[in-house]
Length: 370
Ligand SMILES: Cc1ncc(COP(=O)(O)O)c(C=O)c1O
Image (cartoon, rainbow, N blue to C red; front, side, top):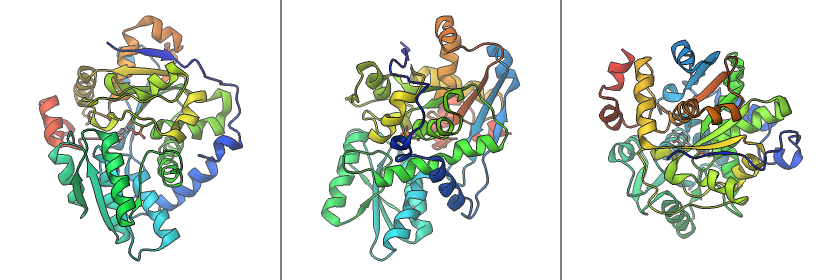
């Protein structure tokens, strides 16, 4: 059953002040962008207009930022993990540096890729539910892969313990008390997405973005909040129904973990513990929270495939959430979505596991893209 919550703590009039700028800022976003645009192979990913989907939904425009085309990694995560590795190397040098992290797949691939670019060692922790295809993709960038923990949050702890034992540097995409600098860099790298959309002429009224630990949602929100204040677009955070820690936190009025095996095909969002830094921004700034089921995600992948666009299970969660909203007139009205609305989705991954993609869509990514 999908769940929907207008953020009870939203304070749209609140300025994006120094306490938030200390986490993420326009200045930090510009600095990250300046570094990333120097990386070999960098190019903005396509911002695709989808008129058929817009007509179907009765809105003015639908835009889909296609991160399946991000470097060779097929996900936006490259912008965060690899940027944080760059910053670490700049601060502490390459000598004896080993980086580690836990991952559902995409972040580990980004850290492994960044480590290979920097010429340092990476040891990446995956939990029991991560597909072998995703583990293999991490190894293909020269990283060692360790399988430990029954879910993402358990593998985060396993990598942190190994780092403490071995003197490695953790490059996590989530933050916890006392560990904030690196995840701040990771999120600051993600803000590049919002900058690119702006340069590509995207002027959304509503942004649907998926939430794992909340990093990307906080990054794209912070950029527009600092720049446009209360006239920024509405931000709707979409999570899988059994890993909806951000919605649970908003409902409880305090940061709240969800536990269990977090089983979902929407693997990149199977996180039960919000990032503290991300939550500090989302709590007062996100407009609404929404959950989707595995079936919703699979249906969104197939609908996107009809448009010739490849979106992975986690990449389409925003679109899946929007389709849910369209099926619930009261939610649609609560978000002020009408015929003049311009909806932006961050399609955060392509077919990051082609075998899984093909099983769900019934065609290979290559067949879909023609
Ligand atoms: C494809 C994809 N989209 C979205 C997310 C969510 O990002 P975050 O954990 O920063 O909320 C992830 C996280 O791994 C992901 O892999």
